[in-house]
Length: 303
Ligand SMILES: Cc1ncc(COP(=O)(O)O)c(C=O)c1O
Image 1 (cartoon, rainbow, N blue to C red):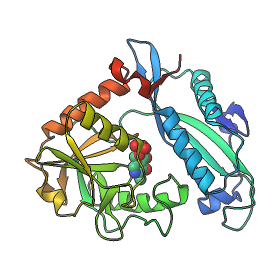
Image 2 (image 1 turned 90 degrees about the vertical axis):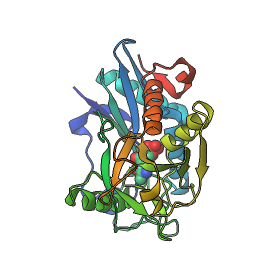
Image 3 (image 1 turned 180 degrees about the vertical axis):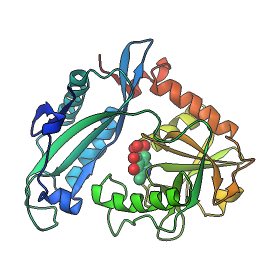
């Protein structure tokens, strides 16, 4: 039996249902997180990656959107641990918390409605193939801009923007789309932040460039500087830089560290997975799987 946390209790997943008239279902007035937990066979342990950071971002967004919820950071973490134990997962899983409006009400607004919290888990391997490199396009869809809706939070409604870009890429036979922001600079992938590498320096758009403030992005900036000794710059990226740089990779909880080998039909570098990206991948996967003692504080053991 797989359980979901719903209406303040654990219920069999089939019973976690909302009405078609639900306000958040109708208007996307909800906010979510995506958290990964990695199963380490040797340790017989499940490690949840950066759990508190994800719930902090959820709580920040919830406050901004007036979701009035009684759960504390400790409550969210406790419920998450309990759910994974209850579901007895012994494989990599994706954890999806969602804060939404419970009433069945017609009118899109972020005020005067009661909020609810639900949490479910799904087994998940690689969201994107991380080994051989992916082919992407620059999407004709622009990333939603700050003065339309905040891209920095995982607000459900704005994922229409991601879905349009991803669909365009898939329909062109590609793996992913990179969106430009409204001023024409590189923003991010449909569900990933982006780094380019030029002359051994890593460059990524700043948090004021209409990107989701990615937890993986921040973590990678830290380890690339401190552990690997690279210079990392946060600045605007022109689209032509995607073609003249040496390496490109996407990153995120789902995407992990995903090398890009082609943009709009043009090879990135020599068209193979670059050496710096490989180095970063190796370090990242060691940390998230619990094989690197130094970074154990990124992880919360479940069992
Ligand atoms: C639009 C978007 N950008 C970036 C990311 C990466 O964020 P994080 O590293 O916090 O998972 C995500 C994650 O799902 C996303 O949806």
